[in-house]
Amino acid sequence: MTNLSEANLYNGVAVDPRDEGRESPSVVLKYPAYKDSGVEWLGEVPEHWMLMPIKHLALLNPRKSGFAGDTNQLCSFVPMEKLKTGVVQLDEERPIEEVIGGYTYFEDGDVLQAKVTPCFENMNVAIAKGLTNGIGFGSSEINVLRPCKGVNTEYLFYRVQEGSYMSFCTSSMIGAGGLKRVPTDVINNFKIAAPELFEQIQIARFLDHETARIDALIEEQQRLIQLLKEKRQAVISHAVTKGLDPTVPMKDSGVEWLGKVPAHWNVTRSKFVFRLVSGYAFKSEFFQKNGDGEKVLITPGSFDELGKLYFSEKSTVQYEGEWQSQFELKVGDLVMVLTDLSYKKLILGRAAFVERDDALLNQRIAKVIITPKVKDNYLWFVINSDVMREQLKLTASGATVFHTSPEKVGDCWMALPPEKEQLEITAFIEKFHFKLDKLIQQVIDTINLLSERRTALISAAVTGKIDVRGWQPPASAPSHELEQEAM
Image (cartoon, rainbow, N blue to C red; front, side, top):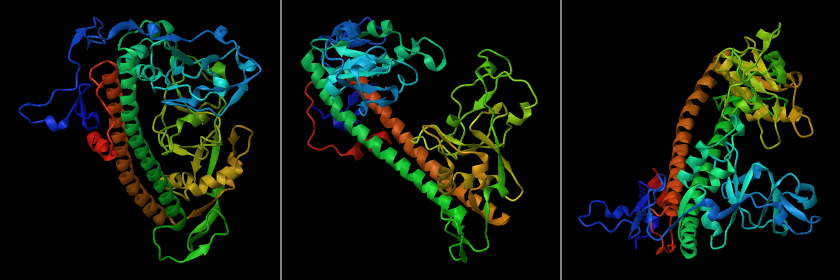
Protein backbone atom coordinates (compact mmCIF):
# COMPACT_ATOMS: atom_id res chain seq x y z
CA MET A 1 0.00 0.00 0.00
CA THR A 2 1.25 3.49 -0.84
CA ASN A 3 2.65 5.48 2.07
CA LEU A 4 0.18 8.26 2.92
CA SER A 5 3.05 10.40 4.20
CA GLU A 6 4.02 10.87 0.56
CA ALA A 7 0.49 11.57 -0.61
CA ASN A 8 -1.30 14.77 -1.55
CA LEU A 9 -4.97 15.41 -0.86
CA TYR A 10 -7.20 16.01 -3.84
CA ASN A 11 -10.85 16.71 -3.04
CA GLY A 12 -10.44 15.00 0.32
CA VAL A 13 -8.82 11.84 -1.09
CA ALA A 14 -5.15 10.96 -0.70
CA VAL A 15 -3.34 10.26 -3.97
CA ASP A 16 0.28 9.32 -4.52
CA PRO A 17 1.83 12.19 -6.56
CA ARG A 18 4.17 9.69 -8.24
CA ASP A 19 1.12 8.33 -10.12
CA GLU A 20 0.58 11.58 -12.03
CA GLY A 21 1.25 11.13 -15.73
CA ARG A 22 1.43 7.34 -15.61
CA GLU A 23 -0.64 5.30 -18.05
CA SER A 24 -1.77 2.93 -15.30
CA PRO A 25 -1.79 4.83 -12.02
CA SER A 26 -1.94 2.89 -8.79
CA VAL A 27 -5.30 2.68 -7.06
CA VAL A 28 -6.42 5.78 -5.19
CA LEU A 29 -6.46 5.00 -1.47
CA LYS A 30 -10.18 4.34 -1.14
CA TYR A 31 -12.24 1.52 0.35
CA PRO A 32 -13.20 -1.34 -1.99
CA ALA A 33 -16.94 -0.66 -1.69
CA TYR A 34 -19.13 2.27 -0.65
CA LYS A 35 -22.80 2.81 0.03
CA ASP A 36 -25.05 5.86 -0.11
CA SER A 37 -25.47 7.20 3.42
CA GLY A 38 -28.63 9.09 2.60
CA VAL A 39 -27.15 12.03 4.52
CA GLU A 40 -26.27 15.11 2.50
CA TRP A 41 -23.05 15.98 4.32
CA LEU A 42 -21.81 12.39 4.39
CA GLY A 43 -22.45 11.27 0.83
CA GLU A 44 -21.03 7.81 0.20
CA VAL A 45 -19.44 5.95 3.11
CA PRO A 46 -17.57 2.63 3.35
CA GLU A 47 -20.02 -0.22 2.92
CA HIS A 48 -19.28 -1.83 6.29
CA TRP A 49 -19.47 1.41 8.34
CA MET A 50 -22.51 1.97 10.56
CA LEU A 51 -24.72 5.04 10.34
CA MET A 52 -25.67 6.61 13.67
CA PRO A 53 -26.13 9.94 15.48
CA ILE A 54 -23.24 11.14 17.64
CA LYS A 55 -25.26 10.39 20.79
CA HIS A 56 -24.69 6.68 20.05
CA LEU A 57 -20.97 7.36 19.91
CA ALA A 58 -20.62 9.46 23.08
CA LEU A 59 -22.54 10.68 26.10
CA LEU A 60 -22.81 14.45 25.98
CA ASN A 61 -22.26 16.26 29.30
CA PRO A 62 -22.47 13.39 31.85
CA ARG A 63 -24.46 14.20 34.96
CA LYS A 64 -22.56 15.27 38.06
CA SER A 65 -24.71 12.82 40.01
CA GLY A 66 -22.51 10.15 38.47
CA PHE A 67 -19.61 11.37 40.58
CA ALA A 68 -19.40 9.33 43.78
CA GLY A 69 -15.94 10.32 45.00
CA ASP A 70 -14.74 12.38 47.94
CA THR A 71 -15.73 16.02 47.45
CA ASN A 72 -13.00 17.12 49.86
CA GLN A 73 -10.26 16.02 47.47
CA LEU A 74 -8.67 18.26 44.86
CA CYS A 75 -9.49 18.25 41.17
CA SER A 76 -8.13 19.99 38.08
CA PHE A 77 -9.87 23.25 37.16
CA VAL A 78 -10.01 24.36 33.51
CA PRO A 79 -11.20 27.87 32.54
CA MET A 80 -12.17 28.31 28.89
CA GLU A 81 -8.89 30.01 27.92
CA LYS A 82 -6.95 26.89 28.98
CA LEU A 83 -8.70 24.64 26.45
CA LYS A 84 -6.94 24.75 23.08
CA THR A 85 -6.70 22.48 20.05
CA GLY A 86 -5.30 19.22 21.35
CA VAL A 87 -4.20 20.72 24.67
CA VAL A 88 -5.75 21.17 28.11
CA GLN A 89 -3.55 23.37 30.29
CA LEU A 90 -3.58 21.80 33.76
CA ASP A 91 -2.01 24.30 36.14
CA GLU A 92 -4.91 25.01 38.48
CA GLU A 93 -6.49 22.90 41.23
CA ARG A 94 -9.52 23.41 43.46
CA PRO A 95 -11.38 21.37 46.09
CA ILE A 96 -14.23 19.51 44.39
CA GLU A 97 -16.73 20.82 46.94
CA GLU A 98 -16.03 24.38 45.74
CA VAL A 99 -16.69 23.73 42.06
CA ILE A 100 -19.17 20.86 41.86
CA GLY A 101 -22.12 23.23 41.97
CA GLY A 102 -21.61 25.61 39.06
CA TYR A 103 -19.05 24.13 36.70
CA THR A 104 -18.80 21.46 34.00
CA TYR A 105 -17.74 18.02 35.23
CA PHE A 106 -15.38 15.67 33.35
CA GLU A 107 -12.94 12.81 33.90
CA ASP A 108 -9.75 11.44 32.37
CA GLY A 109 -10.55 10.13 28.88
CA ASP A 110 -13.37 12.58 28.14
CA VAL A 111 -13.26 14.78 25.05
CA LEU A 112 -13.68 18.47 25.87
CA GLN A 113 -14.98 20.87 23.23
CA ALA A 114 -15.80 24.58 23.48
CA LYS A 115 -19.47 25.29 22.84
CA VAL A 116 -19.37 29.09 22.47
CA THR A 117 -18.20 31.28 19.58
CA PRO A 118 -15.42 31.89 18.57
CA CYS A 119 -13.76 29.13 20.61
CA PHE A 120 -15.82 26.45 18.90
CA GLU A 121 -14.86 27.60 15.40
CA ASN A 122 -11.22 27.75 16.52
CA MET A 123 -11.46 24.02 17.25
CA ASN A 124 -10.72 24.32 20.96
CA VAL A 125 -11.09 20.60 21.54
CA ALA A 126 -8.85 18.20 23.46
CA ILE A 127 -8.79 14.96 25.42
CA ALA A 128 -8.73 15.30 29.22
CA LYS A 129 -5.60 13.51 30.48
CA GLY A 130 -3.62 13.63 33.71
CA LEU A 131 -6.36 15.31 35.75
CA THR A 132 -5.78 15.61 39.49
CA ASN A 133 -7.39 12.50 41.02
CA GLY A 134 -8.72 11.79 37.51
CA ILE A 135 -11.39 14.49 37.97
CA GLY A 136 -11.85 17.92 36.41
CA PHE A 137 -14.28 20.82 36.50
CA GLY A 138 -14.25 23.75 34.14
CA SER A 139 -16.10 26.49 32.34
CA SER A 140 -19.81 26.01 31.75
CA GLU A 141 -19.04 26.88 28.10
CA ILE A 142 -17.28 23.52 27.64
CA ASN A 143 -19.11 20.48 26.26
CA VAL A 144 -17.99 17.06 27.50
CA LEU A 145 -18.18 14.01 25.22
CA ARG A 146 -17.66 10.73 27.08
CA PRO A 147 -16.99 7.84 24.64
CA CYS A 148 -19.48 4.98 24.77
CA LYS A 149 -18.32 1.40 25.10
CA GLY A 150 -16.62 0.30 21.88
CA VAL A 151 -15.60 3.86 20.94
CA ASN A 152 -11.97 4.96 20.85
CA THR A 153 -11.36 8.28 22.60
CA GLU A 154 -8.76 9.48 20.10
CA TYR A 155 -11.08 8.65 17.18
CA LEU A 156 -13.88 10.65 18.84
CA PHE A 157 -11.46 13.55 19.34
CA TYR A 158 -10.77 13.66 15.61
CA ARG A 159 -14.38 12.99 14.64
CA VAL A 160 -15.59 16.24 16.22
CA GLN A 161 -13.00 18.21 14.23
CA GLU A 162 -14.38 17.04 10.89
CA GLY A 163 -15.36 19.77 8.43
CA SER A 164 -19.05 18.99 7.89
CA TYR A 165 -19.65 18.61 11.61
CA MET A 166 -17.93 21.93 12.32
CA SER A 167 -19.84 23.75 9.57
CA PHE A 168 -23.24 22.32 10.54
CA CYS A 169 -22.77 23.10 14.23
CA THR A 170 -21.51 26.61 13.50
CA SER A 171 -24.49 27.38 11.26
CA SER A 172 -26.85 26.03 13.97
CA MET A 173 -25.55 28.26 16.77
CA ILE A 174 -28.09 30.28 18.72
CA GLY A 175 -27.70 33.42 20.81
CA ALA A 176 -26.44 36.93 20.21
CA GLY A 177 -23.01 38.23 19.22
CA GLY A 178 -20.13 36.61 21.05
CA LEU A 179 -22.51 34.48 23.16
CA LYS A 180 -23.67 32.14 20.39
CA ARG A 181 -23.57 28.48 21.38
CA VAL A 182 -24.04 25.10 19.73
CA PRO A 183 -27.31 23.54 20.99
CA THR A 184 -26.77 20.13 22.57
CA ASP A 185 -29.48 18.51 20.42
CA VAL A 186 -27.59 19.57 17.29
CA ILE A 187 -24.52 17.66 18.49
CA ASN A 188 -26.46 14.66 19.77
CA ASN A 189 -28.43 14.19 16.55
CA PHE A 190 -25.67 14.87 14.05
CA LYS A 191 -25.52 11.83 11.72
CA ILE A 192 -22.18 10.15 11.14
CA ALA A 193 -20.81 6.86 9.85
CA ALA A 194 -18.35 5.00 12.06
CA PRO A 195 -16.30 1.80 11.78
CA GLU A 196 -15.67 -0.87 14.39
CA LEU A 197 -13.29 -0.22 17.28
CA PHE A 198 -10.18 -1.77 15.71
CA GLU A 199 -10.56 0.47 12.67
CA GLN A 200 -11.23 3.54 14.81
CA ILE A 201 -7.93 2.88 16.58
CA GLN A 202 -6.09 2.59 13.27
CA ILE A 203 -7.61 5.86 11.99
CA ALA A 204 -6.56 7.58 15.22
CA ARG A 205 -3.02 6.16 14.91
CA PHE A 206 -2.76 7.46 11.37
CA LEU A 207 -4.07 10.90 12.29
CA ASP A 208 -1.88 11.11 15.41
CA HIS A 209 1.17 10.61 13.24
CA GLU A 210 0.22 12.78 10.30
CA THR A 211 -1.24 15.71 12.26
CA ALA A 212 1.81 15.70 14.56
CA ARG A 213 4.02 16.22 11.52
CA ILE A 214 1.84 19.03 10.24
CA ASP A 215 1.60 20.60 13.71
CA ALA A 216 5.38 20.50 14.09
CA LEU A 217 5.84 22.32 10.81
CA ILE A 218 3.18 24.88 11.72
CA GLU A 219 4.99 25.47 15.02
CA GLU A 220 8.24 26.04 13.14
CA GLN A 221 6.54 28.60 10.92
CA GLN A 222 5.01 30.34 13.95
CA ARG A 223 8.44 30.56 15.57
CA LEU A 224 9.74 32.12 12.36
CA ILE A 225 6.99 34.76 12.52
CA GLN A 226 7.95 35.53 16.12
CA LEU A 227 11.60 35.92 15.15
CA LEU A 228 10.65 38.24 12.30
CA LYS A 229 8.54 40.35 14.67
CA GLU A 230 11.43 40.52 17.14
CA LYS A 231 13.68 41.64 14.29
CA ARG A 232 11.12 44.33 13.45
CA GLN A 233 11.20 45.65 17.03
CA ALA A 234 15.00 45.57 17.15
CA VAL A 235 15.27 47.58 13.92
CA ILE A 236 12.74 50.17 15.14
CA SER A 237 14.41 50.57 18.54
CA HIS A 238 17.88 50.90 17.02
CA ALA A 239 16.77 53.44 14.42
CA VAL A 240 14.98 55.75 16.88
CA THR A 241 17.86 55.72 19.40
CA LYS A 242 21.01 55.37 17.28
CA GLY A 243 19.97 56.74 13.89
CA LEU A 244 21.05 55.38 10.50
CA ASP A 245 24.66 56.59 10.31
CA PRO A 246 27.01 54.25 12.25
CA THR A 247 29.88 56.78 11.96
CA VAL A 248 28.11 59.72 13.63
CA PRO A 249 29.59 60.92 16.96
CA MET A 250 27.66 59.63 19.99
CA LYS A 251 26.99 60.97 23.48
CA ASP A 252 25.75 59.46 26.73
CA SER A 253 22.05 60.23 27.01
CA GLY A 254 22.09 59.91 30.79
CA VAL A 255 19.02 57.65 30.51
CA GLU A 256 19.39 53.91 31.12
CA TRP A 257 16.89 52.86 28.46
CA LEU A 258 18.42 55.09 25.78
CA GLY A 259 22.14 54.57 26.35
CA LYS A 260 24.30 56.44 23.85
CA VAL A 261 22.56 58.55 21.20
CA PRO A 262 23.85 60.67 18.31
CA ALA A 263 25.59 63.73 19.74
CA HIS A 264 23.44 66.21 17.79
CA TRP A 265 20.10 64.68 18.94
CA ASN A 266 18.03 66.22 21.70
CA VAL A 267 17.23 64.04 24.73
CA THR A 268 13.92 65.21 26.19
CA ARG A 269 10.90 64.23 28.24
CA SER A 270 7.97 63.00 26.16
CA LYS A 271 5.67 65.73 27.51
CA PHE A 272 7.66 68.34 25.58
CA VAL A 273 7.05 66.46 22.31
CA PHE A 274 3.47 65.20 22.69
CA ARG A 275 0.69 65.13 25.26
CA LEU A 276 -2.15 62.69 25.91
CA VAL A 277 -5.91 63.14 26.29
CA SER A 278 -7.55 60.22 28.12
CA GLY A 279 -10.70 58.52 26.87
CA TYR A 280 -14.14 58.40 28.46
CA ALA A 281 -15.56 55.68 30.73
CA PHE A 282 -18.71 54.91 28.73
CA LYS A 283 -21.40 53.53 31.02
CA SER A 284 -23.79 50.73 30.17
CA GLU A 285 -26.73 53.11 29.80
CA PHE A 286 -24.96 54.79 26.87
CA PHE A 287 -25.11 51.60 24.81
CA GLN A 288 -27.99 50.75 22.49
CA LYS A 289 -27.96 47.57 20.51
CA ASN A 290 -30.24 48.85 17.75
CA GLY A 291 -29.86 52.61 17.95
CA ASP A 292 -29.04 55.12 15.24
CA GLY A 293 -25.69 56.82 14.77
CA GLU A 294 -23.57 53.73 15.25
CA LYS A 295 -20.11 54.39 16.64
CA VAL A 296 -17.10 52.12 17.24
CA LEU A 297 -15.44 52.13 20.62
CA ILE A 298 -11.65 51.88 20.59
CA THR A 299 -10.66 49.70 23.53
CA PRO A 300 -7.35 48.14 24.68
CA GLY A 301 -8.34 44.97 22.81
CA SER A 302 -8.55 46.89 19.52
CA PHE A 303 -4.75 47.13 19.14
CA ASP A 304 -2.75 44.40 17.45
CA GLU A 305 0.97 43.87 17.98
CA LEU A 306 1.86 45.42 14.62
CA GLY A 307 0.47 48.82 15.53
CA LYS A 308 -2.89 48.49 13.77
CA LEU A 309 -6.48 48.79 14.97
CA TYR A 310 -9.05 46.08 14.38
CA PHE A 311 -12.69 45.73 15.41
CA SER A 312 -14.58 42.45 15.82
CA GLU A 313 -17.95 44.12 16.34
CA LYS A 314 -19.50 47.57 16.36
CA SER A 315 -21.01 49.06 19.51
CA THR A 316 -23.69 51.71 19.33
CA VAL A 317 -23.19 54.47 21.85
CA GLN A 318 -25.85 56.99 22.81
CA TYR A 319 -24.34 60.19 24.19
CA GLU A 320 -24.99 63.91 24.62
CA GLY A 321 -23.08 66.81 26.12
CA GLU A 322 -20.17 69.16 25.69
CA TRP A 323 -17.63 66.35 25.77
CA GLN A 324 -18.89 64.86 22.51
CA SER A 325 -16.24 66.34 20.21
CA GLN A 326 -13.44 65.68 22.69
CA PHE A 327 -13.91 61.92 22.49
CA GLU A 328 -14.77 61.63 18.82
CA LEU A 329 -11.86 60.56 16.64
CA LYS A 330 -11.11 61.25 13.02
CA VAL A 331 -8.99 59.52 10.39
CA GLY A 332 -5.31 60.12 11.07
CA ASP A 333 -5.58 60.55 14.84
CA LEU A 334 -2.93 58.66 16.82
CA VAL A 335 -4.18 56.73 19.86
CA MET A 336 -2.28 54.82 22.56
CA VAL A 337 -3.05 52.09 25.14
CA LEU A 338 -2.52 53.04 28.79
CA THR A 339 -3.28 49.63 30.30
CA ASP A 340 -2.36 45.95 30.26
CA LEU A 341 -5.30 43.58 30.63
CA SER A 342 -2.92 41.08 32.24
CA TYR A 343 0.80 40.53 32.52
CA LYS A 344 0.61 38.17 29.52
CA LYS A 345 -1.09 40.57 27.10
CA LEU A 346 1.75 43.10 26.93
CA ILE A 347 -0.36 45.70 25.15
CA LEU A 348 0.65 48.68 27.31
CA GLY A 349 2.03 51.43 25.08
CA ARG A 350 0.76 50.08 21.77
CA ALA A 351 -0.10 52.95 19.45
CA ALA A 352 -2.02 53.07 16.18
CA PHE A 353 -3.47 55.53 13.71
CA VAL A 354 -7.26 55.72 13.38
CA GLU A 355 -8.40 54.75 9.88
CA ARG A 356 -12.15 55.41 10.20
CA ASP A 357 -14.33 58.37 11.13
CA ASP A 358 -16.89 56.62 13.35
CA ALA A 359 -14.64 55.86 16.34
CA LEU A 360 -14.89 56.96 19.97
CA LEU A 361 -12.12 57.09 22.56
CA ASN A 362 -12.82 54.72 25.46
CA GLN A 363 -11.21 54.72 28.91
CA ARG A 364 -7.65 53.42 29.26
CA ILE A 365 -7.00 54.76 25.75
CA ALA A 366 -5.46 58.16 25.07
CA LYS A 367 -5.39 60.40 22.04
CA VAL A 368 -1.89 61.62 21.21
CA ILE A 369 -1.69 65.38 20.64
CA ILE A 370 1.45 65.93 18.55
CA THR A 371 3.53 69.11 18.69
CA PRO A 372 5.37 70.55 15.65
CA LYS A 373 8.63 69.17 17.07
CA VAL A 374 7.98 65.68 15.76
CA LYS A 375 6.57 64.06 12.64
CA ASP A 376 3.51 61.85 13.09
CA ASN A 377 4.91 58.63 11.63
CA TYR A 378 8.25 59.02 13.41
CA LEU A 379 6.47 59.43 16.75
CA TRP A 380 4.41 56.30 16.00
CA PHE A 381 7.65 54.33 15.67
CA VAL A 382 9.07 55.85 18.87
CA ILE A 383 5.98 54.97 20.93
CA ASN A 384 5.92 51.43 19.52
CA SER A 385 9.63 50.87 20.16
CA ASP A 386 10.92 48.59 22.90
CA VAL A 387 12.75 51.55 24.41
CA MET A 388 9.47 53.36 25.13
CA ARG A 389 7.69 50.13 26.15
CA GLU A 390 10.33 49.33 28.79
CA GLN A 391 9.95 52.78 30.33
CA LEU A 392 6.15 52.50 30.33
CA LYS A 393 6.32 49.19 32.21
CA LEU A 394 8.08 50.97 35.06
CA THR A 395 5.30 53.59 35.26
CA ALA A 396 2.45 51.05 35.40
CA SER A 397 0.79 49.94 38.62
CA GLY A 398 -2.13 47.78 39.72
CA ALA A 399 -2.96 44.39 41.22
CA THR A 400 -4.33 42.38 38.29
CA VAL A 401 -4.74 45.11 35.67
CA PHE A 402 -1.73 47.34 35.14
CA HIS A 403 -2.18 50.87 33.90
CA THR A 404 -0.34 54.15 33.63
CA SER A 405 -1.41 57.79 33.25
CA PRO A 406 -0.80 60.59 30.75
CA GLU A 407 1.33 62.35 33.36
CA LYS A 408 3.59 59.32 33.84
CA VAL A 409 3.92 58.81 30.10
CA GLY A 410 4.93 62.44 29.80
CA ASP A 411 7.88 61.82 32.14
CA CYS A 412 9.33 59.10 29.87
CA TRP A 413 12.47 59.99 27.92
CA MET A 414 12.98 59.96 24.17
CA ALA A 415 15.76 60.94 21.76
CA LEU A 416 14.65 63.46 19.16
CA PRO A 417 16.63 63.92 15.92
CA PRO A 418 16.28 66.93 13.60
CA GLU A 419 13.24 66.95 11.30
CA LYS A 420 15.23 65.84 8.23
CA GLU A 421 16.53 62.76 10.05
CA GLN A 422 13.06 61.95 11.37
CA LEU A 423 11.87 61.74 7.77
CA GLU A 424 14.87 59.64 6.71
CA ILE A 425 14.46 57.22 9.62
CA THR A 426 10.72 56.93 8.95
CA ALA A 427 11.33 56.14 5.27
CA PHE A 428 13.95 53.53 6.17
CA ILE A 429 11.73 51.76 8.72
CA GLU A 430 8.70 51.85 6.43
CA LYS A 431 10.73 50.25 3.62
CA PHE A 432 12.00 47.60 6.00
CA HIS A 433 8.45 47.04 7.30
CA PHE A 434 7.16 46.50 3.78
CA LYS A 435 9.71 43.78 3.08
CA LEU A 436 9.17 42.14 6.47
CA ASP A 437 5.38 42.28 6.22
CA LYS A 438 5.55 40.60 2.83
CA LEU A 439 7.73 37.83 4.24
CA ILE A 440 5.47 37.39 7.30
CA GLN A 441 2.43 37.15 5.04
CA GLN A 442 4.12 34.41 3.01
CA VAL A 443 4.72 32.46 6.22
CA ILE A 444 1.10 33.02 7.30
CA ASP A 445 -0.09 31.75 3.92
CA THR A 446 2.00 28.62 4.41
CA ILE A 447 0.49 28.09 7.86
CA ASN A 448 -3.02 28.50 6.43
CA LEU A 449 -2.33 25.94 3.71
CA LEU A 450 -0.92 23.49 6.24
CA SER A 451 -3.96 24.03 8.49
CA GLU A 452 -6.26 23.37 5.54
CA ARG A 453 -4.27 20.23 4.78
CA ARG A 454 -4.66 19.10 8.39
CA THR A 455 -8.43 19.67 8.37
CA ALA A 456 -8.85 17.93 5.02
CA LEU A 457 -6.80 14.95 6.17
CA ILE A 458 -8.88 14.54 9.34
CA SER A 459 -12.13 14.84 7.40
CA ALA A 460 -11.02 12.34 4.77
CA ALA A 461 -9.97 9.75 7.37
CA VAL A 462 -12.97 9.94 9.71
CA THR A 463 -15.53 9.94 6.89
CA GLY A 464 -13.98 7.00 5.04
CA LYS A 465 -12.77 8.88 1.98
CA ILE A 466 -9.40 7.21 2.45
CA ASP A 467 -8.61 3.69 3.63
CA VAL A 468 -5.82 3.63 6.25
CA ARG A 469 -6.33 0.07 7.51
CA GLY A 470 -3.00 -1.06 6.09
CA TRP A 471 -1.08 2.07 7.04
CA GLN A 472 2.08 1.83 9.11
CA PRO A 473 4.22 4.75 10.28
CA PRO A 474 7.27 5.20 8.05
CA ALA A 475 10.78 4.95 9.46
CA SER A 476 11.35 8.63 8.74
CA ALA A 477 9.17 11.46 7.52
CA PRO A 478 11.10 14.68 6.91
CA SER A 479 9.01 17.76 7.57
CA HIS A 480 10.40 19.52 4.47
CA GLU A 481 8.27 17.19 2.32
CA LEU A 482 5.13 18.56 3.96
CA GLU A 483 6.40 22.10 3.54
CA GLN A 484 6.84 21.58 -0.18
CA GLU A 485 3.31 20.17 -0.44
CA ALA A 486 1.94 23.26 1.27
CA MET A 487 3.76 25.76 -0.94
